[in-house]
Image 1 (tube, helix red, strand yellow):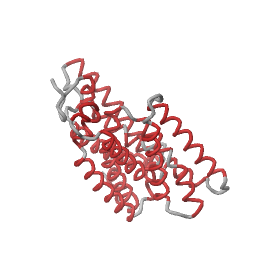
Image 2 (cartoon, one colour):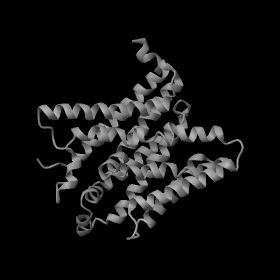
Image 3 (cartoon, rainbow, N blue to C red):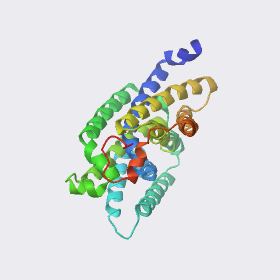
Image 4 (tube, rainbow, N blue to C red):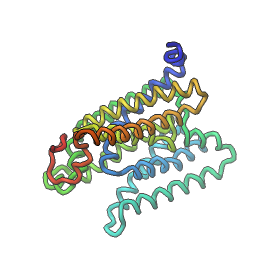
Amino acid sequence: MEWLVGPFEVVFVQRALWGGVLVSLICALAGTWLVLRGMAFLGDAMSHGMLPGIALASLVGGNLLIGAALSAVVMAAGVTAVGRSPRLSQDTSIGLLFVGMLSLGVIIVSRSQSFAVDLTGFLFGDVLAVRQDEIVLLGAALAFALVVSVLGYRPFVALTFDERKARTLGLRPKTAHAALLGLLTLAIVASFHIVGTLLVFGLLIAPPATMLPWARRIPMIMVGAALFGSAAVFLGLLVSWHAGTAAGATISAVAVLQFLLSHLAAGCVNGARRLPRPVSTLMARPGPRTDEVPS
């Protein structure tokens, strides 16, 4: 069993495991809503929209996390503001902001001759370089994400499946949408140093999508996503150690492989017996229960 536990006897791999698991838990909370609402493109745009803030912070010698957070907040505010236009679809407004923020980031990067290494870390992350203080920050971010998820659960469910009903019940869908954007921003900012912005979807989208065919309730999707994400971190670090591959990319690849295997298994099982209807089918029916799919 030395091949299984040996890598995790090294201190920096232990920190990478703890950091990756905490990121998985945060991403499970935010990613579940993204998957259910079909808003993966928004997450992609926001992750790349952090580049201007990170580039500026790097050039002036500031904190990269603060730069990333400020840039993500600007991106989220822009998505909210532009999305109110009745003549533009949400995808159009998000796409335009995505291109604009990414272009601005590249322009800023082009002004520096020594930004290549930092840009590589931004894009692909460095999970093996997680420090103890970053683990503490991730723990605090997870606690905050849990509070937001618990307090906003009912409005989030109503917003996801029936926005008109949410408005009728006085659940303030616009406020709920802003809170969801804040939760997504928290997850992306917390994750980019671990797996990078190009690979963040390995933990943000794949684990909830992996659990989706097997769950009837939204909390079960979140729990399953947390377990699948944590397993992807463990297996990704293990494979990376023995195969000599990039740790962040390997973690994301394992998460995507889990998704493919899950949906393949669901297709096979579905041919033999009737599976519980996934939560995503709620979107096709008016007035469902907030936590369970009707049979």
